[in-house]
Length: 200
Image 1 (cartoon, helix red, strand yellow):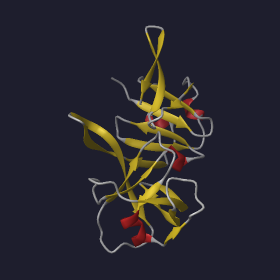
Image 2 (cartoon, rainbow, N blue to C red; image 1 turned 180 degrees about the vertical axis):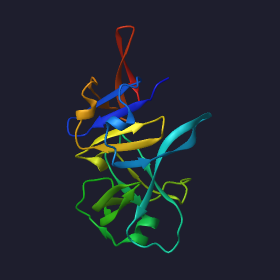
Image 3 (tube, rainbow, N blue to C red; image 1 turned 60 degrees about the vertical axis):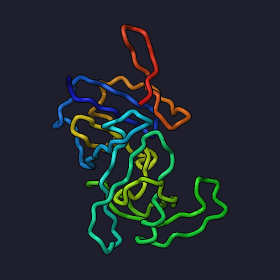
C-alpha cells in the first residue's frame, strides 16, 4: 500500500485523500512539520489502537519540570484549549464572562512550537481536565489552530505538514467535506463507481 495522506484546506474548506505515491517527499517543501503519536483507548468494550493523535508541544514560558507535553489533535473540533491545572503554570488565566464559547476562562499570548511549527501570541480557552486524561496531555487543538495553511496528515510517517500553497499537489482531486454532529469529519468515498460517506 502506498503513502496514506489526508490534506485539509482550511481556506477553502476542502479535503482530499489519495493512496498512490504520485508525489515524492523531495517535490514538496515541508518546512513546518510536527510528528504525532497515537494514543490508544477503549470505547465500551472495543479497543482502538489508534484513537487520538498527540502532538508534542513546547512552550516559550519556562516550566519548572522538564517533562514531555502533548496536545490532543482533533481535526473535526473547532476549539483550541488548555487544561486549567496546566495553563496556570504558563500564564495568567483570566475570566471572560461575556464569552459565548465552551469556557468562561482563557489564557492569552501563548507562544511555543509543535515540532518546528511555531505559534505566537495564541489565545486558548481554559477547561477542566477530563477524568482519566494523563497529566502529560495538556490540552486540545483542532484544524482551526492552523487556519491560513494547508494541512497534510501523513499517516504512514505519523507527521503533519503545513503548506502555504498547493502548487506541488496540482494533480490531486479535492472534494468537499462536512463535520458530523460529534465532530467527526465525513469523507466522500467512491467504491466501484458508487459514492459513500465515511466517518474519519
